[in-house]
Image (cartoon, rainbow, N blue to C red; front, top):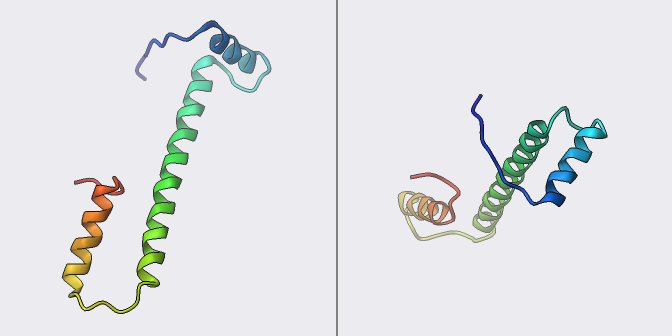
Amino acid sequence: MATMTVSLPDPMKEWIEMQVEDGEYASSSDYVRDLIRRDRERRNEARLEELRRIVDEGLNGGVSKRSLDEIFADAEARARARGLIDD
């Protein structure tokens, strides 16, 4: 496991120490790892919601005169522009 040094203002450091003392977390590292996991989950959920919105928009958009290849290319370009898929 890698090590990282982080500087925090005293109130934040004290907050983390209180969470550990209360038995909520085993260590300050455990607390930070939990925050990172939650942030990743939140961001992934936001991406999923955006994809759902795009699908709903497509389903409610009616019949297109474009070819299937054109539709997929446009959808892929939009998803890339929004950071929903990698290049």
